[in-house]
Amino acid sequence: MAAQHPVLIILAGGASSRMWPLREKSLIKFGKVPLLQMQLENYATLGFQEAIIVGNPENVDDMRGIVGQMKSDMTIEVAVQPEPKGMGDALLKAADFFVDRPDTPIYITQVHDVTDKSLHESILAAYQAEPETTFLAGVEMEDYFPGGYLIVDEAGKISGMVEKPGAENRPSNLVNIVAHIHAHVGRLFDAIRAEYASDTPGDDHYERAMDALMKTHMYRVVPYSGHWSALKFPWHTLDIMDYFLSKIEGQTVHESAFVASTASLVGNVFVDEGSKIFPGAAIVGPAYVGKDVIVGNNALIRNSMVLDRCQVGFTTEVARSYVAADCNMHACRVLDSIFAPGVNFSAGCTTANLRIDKGIVKSTVKGQRIASGRDKLGAIIGENAFLGVDVMTMPGIKVGASAEVGPGTHVLEDIRENMRVYVKQELGIIEKKQ
Image 1 (cartoon, rainbow, N blue to C red):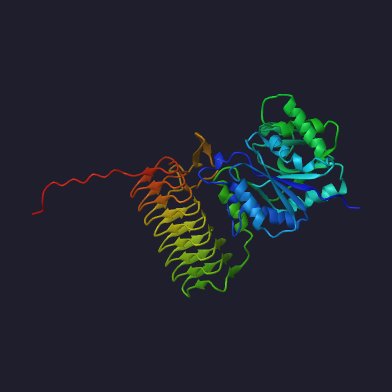
Image 2 (spheres, rainbow, N blue to C red):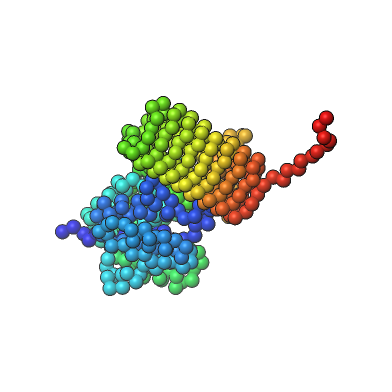
């Protein structure tokens, strides 16, 4: 008899401050629906019948709205973690759903981890074969990754984890990813509560609970070598965009879309209903063009996502960029950038994307300069920001929601939300022209 399918727990809370100026990572659309909905639909095809999403006070209403409009046979509940106190605290917020069933198996994942479907298939198959064993996915990494490494023996038994051990001290090449199946939810939650009762400082109560359980219960690794992108910083949006763009095969143009005879579609391209591609424009794949998008004469979209109702005006170039719905662009350059919904990017605007020394672009996150890992990174612009004509942003710059940037401004530092920034111009009149 097959083992009971685990209850899915999707962690989607915590603090999103690292993603500023983007609003909420689980709500970012990589196509028609938000990332959370895409993940839920994917899990439904894997046979999950029950899911619990753990959100935070800022995103829980949106999540309930997404769940409410989904058509799925999977039962989905939403719990709230009031404060970002770590993964252990988030998991305990789902405890009320298991009061009368402590022996229920659970599968813990994070909404912002994007992987191939094969990871979930592999770990579920391993659990079905050994339903009393706890399984953790381990991503096989050749190069050093600053994460948690699994300590495993030749048989795949896990005896511990080491957080950021350094390249020379890695106990294996397997990096822990939050894709964990626990055979008994009650046993795990008791171990987490014991860690909180110990008053040991830190926010790694979940990891410490597992470390304690490993001493008396079997933990095994499920190695994984496929794609893994984690949406932790705003520029990771481009990594996940690239993953979904890679899934486009051939050219799909909705029957209601208009593509001028002198426009060009090259490579793997998706054009949704009602969109208009005018003469001289080019869409170079992989590329996604959403509903009711206007791509003006001689405009170019390449290796990018442009979502619903955007206007990509005359001679505009959008390259390797993510542009959310309802953005307006005209005669401008959008390079390696991320636009939240409703951005206005006026004529002549450019997002500079390359440092003079061609080094890795850095960006400021919570007051700290962080290396993006990208040698090309343009701007990250928040919802409904308005940039006037001839604005230029330097590499890695972020502009907050509803900010206004006056014409001709060179943006050298991040601009917070609702700020108005402009260059003061003085006109000198010497004398009346003779």
